[in-house]
Length: 155
Image 1: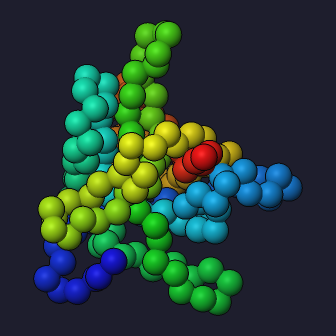
Image 2: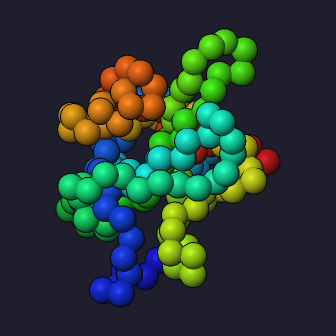
């Protein structure tokens, strides 16, 4: 990923990753296996149709490429989007974080693992920033300050 002044990617919201260390890596090498923070950059609403179109977050979020310091080293947080889907057998919707990457040619974020089935890998991400709760309330009808990360892939 190239991060220069001609690159006009949307801003994001910095999330902390929560994991149960005693279980080891249940993500099978997913994006949250090594990252301590993720950058939420958009919403993928698939309740009506699976378009693959990720909408940007409202303005006022952290500039893209937010850096965090972990164990004395600087890291750039992997980017994620909130994927909203309908439950298969009961009424209502659910949300999960999924990995996305910037496509410079199309000037938009796209799913990192497009066409593959990603599932819950045991980790969560969240923040005390009220904008995450407001976002979940807008799409789900209730506030959630922590969301599951769907970053496990089995071949």
